[in-house]
View 1: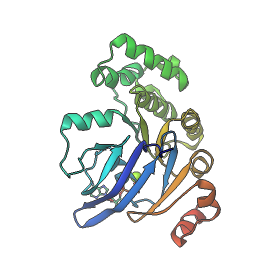
View 2 (view 1 turned 90 degrees about the horizontal axis):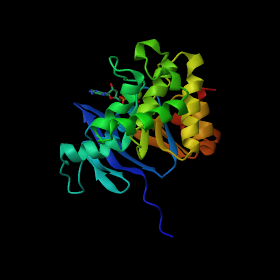
View 3 (view 1 turned 135 degrees about the horizontal axis):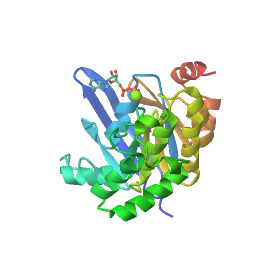
Length: 253
Ligand code: ADP
Ligand code: MG
């Protein structure tokens, strides 16, 4: 049988900001249904890498493929139109450390905004979808409140429901629990663990080593703009090959 087309692939991505080479020849393959965790010290380029996957940052070189189709830039190097890029982005949900909910929208309005505006869903369809997702993340009773009335953990669960309401092919998370009080981390990770179990394809930048070890299919360890190790979690945590990974992990022991 031929190998399945990766859900998401980065090929030889590089990015500089001025003099600073932030990403150097990054390649990544995410198979359908897999959850990949991206680990690495602060400043190693994790967020930039994630943002290059949906062209929130434009990589200087390299290609991104979503289910085999180019994102952002064609094989000949030309950038795609804004409309095409918006289409690709709609298939990749993103969840940020700082939630990024719209403060002047209720929870429900936050969740239905993109599906109605971007996908053209009718309001009834979007509301039905949103209500199902809010129930799934345990927030059915919060649909009509505004974000200020939510805890950080609740806000992040709304952000996940909002991303899911687009029925994305891939979800990208950038340190989704880093802004949360420790007692609220678990409720967000539980939602993410359920998604992984259901076969959602996810790329998760995180410092939650337990999540990376127990939930993820692959670990990508970055340092100073390069992928230093790429291995199944048992191998990465049990037998890190490089001194850099060993040093990084020793801080979490
Ligand atoms: P991480 O997410 O691993 O902490 P980042 O991708 O945020 O790392 O940043 C990697 C490096 O790139 C850091 O040195 C950071 O200061 C720099 N950087 C990130 N974004 C920009 C930007 N828009 N302009 C200039 N430098 C940036
Ligand atoms: Mg970051």
